[in-house]
Image (tube, rainbow, N blue to C red; front, side):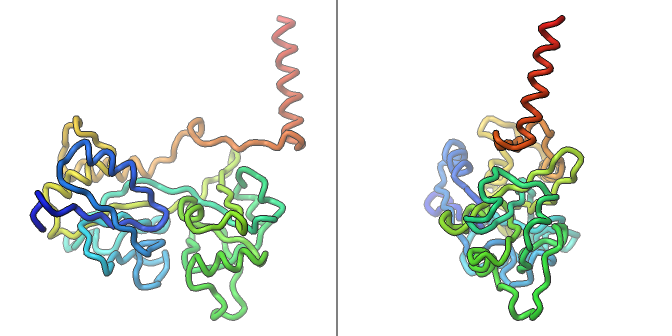
Length: 278
């Protein structure tokens, strides 16, 4: 580790991850400079293996901590077991989005349900998670796009749609060519499993500054008391694994002219009449 009084703490982050809030909290808690370094990663792997494998976080840039995403149910490679070479804390879970062409018939909707994904041919790509609805296989495996950008080029032609983590989809798409639709479960439907975002650093860089940053990444402020590292790591993983209460999730808006909206308005009017009679 370099001289902390002069050199910044360097944090690499994957595409679609927004580090601004953490930078503000760090400035309020520490005098050491903090430098965020964008990395050319969508998911954490650097070897093109896709999200079905444990994620390798080796990067070519010298950073102290890496903030990355991994596929549903996956963990960064080397972060588990007695022989682990990396510390890792789970920060949050990302929502899933459907990306279609900008002029698609679904493009004006605020969101789609998992059931509505059946209306769109899903294109297979390396970052399509096994937990998501099955994508259509390519007749020739060599046609499979190599990465999300290549898949988005196909989406823009009207070939079909793809599923991506919502923040990554918003980061990579172009408004003139693509529509990004969050996938939100209706009542009684299971949620799609989302990708997770982790902070990872080598065990030999486990300094006091890195531990302080880890606390800020978890949401601890400068005034917060610090619990043991093991307890904090367990609490962060537990919180991230619990879905938000349905009342806190964004509710899907209805088209005012749709049949669903008309039925809802009629039900509301009947309820108002009943209240007046009482």
